[in-house]
Length: 233
Image 1 (cartoon, helix red, strand yellow):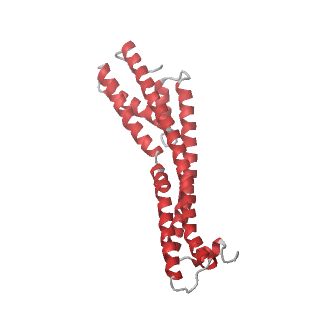
Image 2: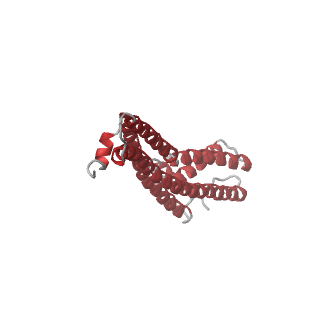
Image 3: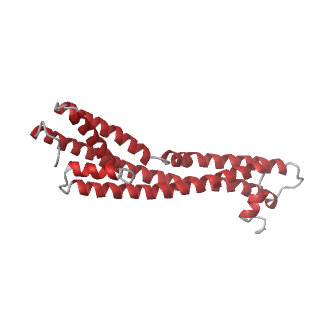
């Protein structure tokens, strides 16, 4: 009885449809765990790069020096540094065109930073929707496998003259394995989705705060030196 009801025997004894459902859920679970670890390491890197740049930004280094460094390290820069570079690039382009209107300069820099912010946020949110889909759909896929397995089991029992627990249990257990796999895939995905969504919200707030602070610095520089490029803060 123990051998017949082992997990391996239950999987091997299940109908082809239930086995396909189990295989699908196993693949989804493995893919989900891979996405979780990738997102975990990616968010740690984003936070570390943002913190490093923010520390440099408020250390007293001139804006031009920060922009030169950001341009040289564009591929290795974090989201905050790329947003800063977008704003400075647009600002300096307009200054080179002899545009001295403070409002136009500030609006152009802010638009460039907002566009860069949206691109960075989209990149940070990569795979988040996948985890949400796994968390919401996997239990239903597992339930489908369970319902199909139970139907298959009762269809087979209909041909028997005498039905006992020993004849019913294997078919029901086979079907329930699909539900278990569905929950196994869904629970980590839901937990990770909620955790990452909260972390991404923090990153978003940090970047939006930086955009406002940098805009204020540009505004002060424009007010103090309307005909000179910003060189410090």
